Length: 318
Image 1 (cartoon, rainbow, N blue to C red):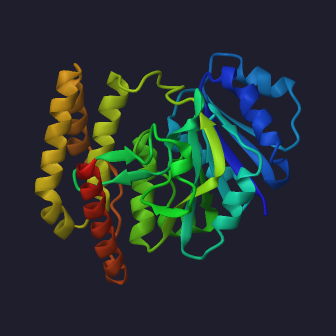
Image 2 (cartoon, helix red, strand yellow):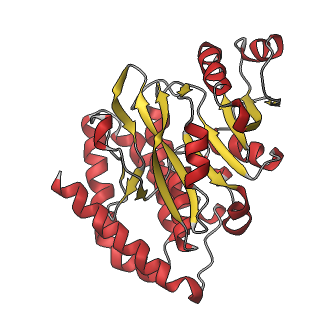
């Protein structure tokens, strides 16, 4: 079994040396590495052209920054192998990680497997061990800033972070790929919700380790671009994935969640930016494709709602 490693790159030459060297440790499981360059103006492409690698390199050159979701989709459509390993460029992969993920993803109802992402600057602390999503419309990293040893067992997660996740390519044919409209942020949660609507699971693979710098492309945890895009995409996530009955049931929680987020960003100086994102999401929601409701998936919607409730209680307990 081999994987297609898919990595968007935008002015990330400073990360590429460690990125490629770490991949080389697992080269026997790598069929190809597809780099989608989103209009970099640094020496990223020169670095790739001047170096030799132990696996085939495919470079897709975009004239502008199309965003994370469209870039990964370009890679998926170009890929030759049955497993897609979506990996950020600002990462280092620990030896044996790809095999561990391949072993775990073999169960029929598993769509994705996420590597345990650790902080590159403090390799004992979790960066992301999977993402949770709740009734308030909030996404939360599992285990962030906690000791890595606390997450040593395989368990089901709501969503795999696409910064270091292995996907079954065949299931993309059934549920669709990432939504190009999202550009970046929430695209992996949107995909995870779709996978659950169709009855699939997402797992954490604690034996797969990826060291992650974080915010390497956007530059910071909070900025106007991230706040606006994430707010817009969250509106789209609710609109396209939840059928009308679940929208009605969850409305008060979603309204409360968006209101609290507005107050949070207002205090940080991004209140108007957050509202702009919400308004854009509401005004442009017809452009995103809704998930078709099927009676055959009814039990999966009940499971999805149950997970949203559980994640809300888990968040409020902390």
